[in-house]
Image (cartoon, rainbow, N blue to C red; front, side, top):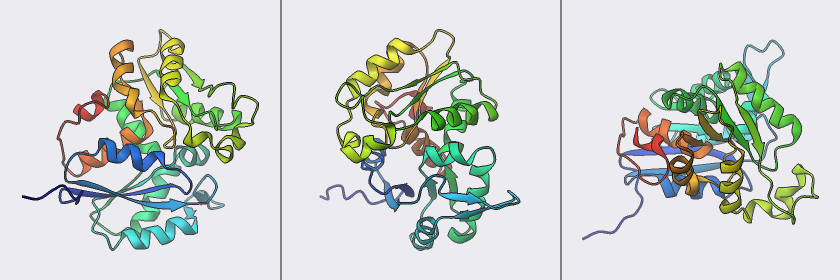
Amino acid sequence: MTTNDNWGWRARIGLFIVGNEVVPEAEWWAMAPSGVSVHAARVTARAPWASWREDRKGVEPAEDLVRGCRQFAAMRLSSVVVGHSSSSFVGGKGWDEAVAANLSGTIGTGVMVTTNGLDTQAALKASGVKRPFLVMPPWFNDDLVAMGLRYYADAGFEPAGHLRYDPGRKWRDLPPADLYGHGMGFEQEVEPLYAQIKAGCPAGADGILIAGTGFRCVSILEALEQDLRRPVLSANQVSLWRCLRAATIHTPVAGYGNLLRL
C-alpha cells in the first residue's frame, strides 16, 4: 500500500508567481485534483513582467521569466501560467497573447502557455458572464484598479461595478503599495471579504470576478455562489481550470465554485 506523494502523473503545471507571495501555491494545491502537481517559479520584476517593444509587435520578458522558462522546458509540463493579474492589466490589450507567443518559443511545443488575463477571459465566457462585478485586492492602487476595469472592457465585457477590498482599521492608513511590506499579505481574512462582496455586489452583475493571484479567497467561492446565485470566479481558480481542461482532465473539483465542475 502506498501513500500520496503528489506526483503529477496526469498533469504537471508550471506557475510563475510573485516572489514574496504564498497564496498562489497554497490555493492551487488546495484545489488540484489527484495526479496533478504544481511547480512554481518566482518573479521579482515589476509589472508588467514583459515589456512591450517600441513597435508593440512583441514583448521582452523579464530575466526571471526567461530563466524560469528554460527550467520549465526540461520538466515535461503540460502547461505554464504567468500567474500575475497585474501584468495583464498593465500590459493591456494584446499583451497576454504576445507573452504567450514569446514564452512558447523557449518552452517548446506541446506545452500550453497562458496568462492569468487569458484564463479569466476564458472562464468568464465559459460561465456566461458578461457584466462581472470586479473585486480587487487592497494593494491595487487607483491606477491599477482603473487599468483592470479598462482591461475587461477592452476584452468585450461590461463591468457592472468594482470593489477594492477594505482590509480593516489596522491597514487603512497605509498606502496600497506598503500593505504587503507591512505583512498584510500574510494576515488576510476571508470572512470580511465575503461580507464586503455579498453587500457590494450590484443587482446588474451577472457574475463576480476576484482578481489578484495573491488575494486569498478560494475558500469562500462556493458560499458566495450559493448566496448570490451567480458564478464566482477567482484568479487562481480560473487558471487551474484552464490548465486542467487543456490537459483533458475533467474530474469535478468540489468546494471551489461551479467553474471547476463544468
